[in-house]
Length: 387
Image (cartoon, rainbow, N blue to C red; front, side, top):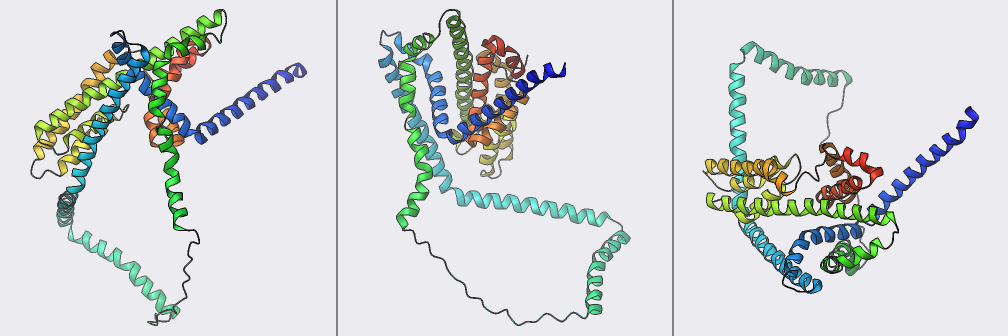
């Protein structure tokens, strides 16, 4: 019986080893090709966001390529205006940085003074005998050390300075241009890949129907129907997640910026955008959304109540959006397990850095969409979901 089972055991071991090797190869491919994959995924995310606008423009009886060009042009103009506003805010922060530093220093000094007062009052409440014991405990190690030195006859420390050693300066034989190129090269490849994003988005949108048809022709018979259903499900679930979160970000940023403007907080456009973006981070969005208005409020002297109101507004907007609007806009089609989301953010953050943290949830949502629509992978889809 053991002889009959040995081939199956060997086959299982071979299958597990092959799976581990394939997983290691995939992780290595994702790591070393991260610029390519990040560019491709970001382009797909933007294509999902802009696709409803393209369909809306096509109702004017314009062909898809023309409608796509119009939508992308408007989107690039919006990104430029948004970047100009953010850059203006950053320039204002740089000008106000000395005043801001003084204000932060005053707050730190006030906190230190308050802590010192609490420590002094606490010591005053302690019995005098306890204070004497504490001083004796602190003096005993010093006295013991002096006694050991006297017994060992340690020579006094000489005041003669140590001899000056010759310091050799190693100059880099490489020319200045080579050094400058070495620093610029690390940013050249990401910038080059980022320049492809508008073109990739355009082709993904203008050739969407053509790609869908040609992709389905790669399969025959019943497999074509299964692949079509899976492809459609992936598109709908991923589109619902991406567009829903984008609309929530626009809503949260707009309302937050307006509220901060009415409250008189500085840099209100920038902190509105950041607070709305941080609010969408799963499970830690509430504390993260409070950081921008709190930091901006530090620069406002003698307006503690205004800062508290701003924090309350940011918290209320987060709770309303996450508990009511999220289910209506994003829907329950993509509801991810909190443990899976945390592990995904750790994995993609370790693999791709900060941009991996941003893309972790869309990637996980797309994987769940695949699992939900492939019969053999449905148990994995239920594992990734909340239901």
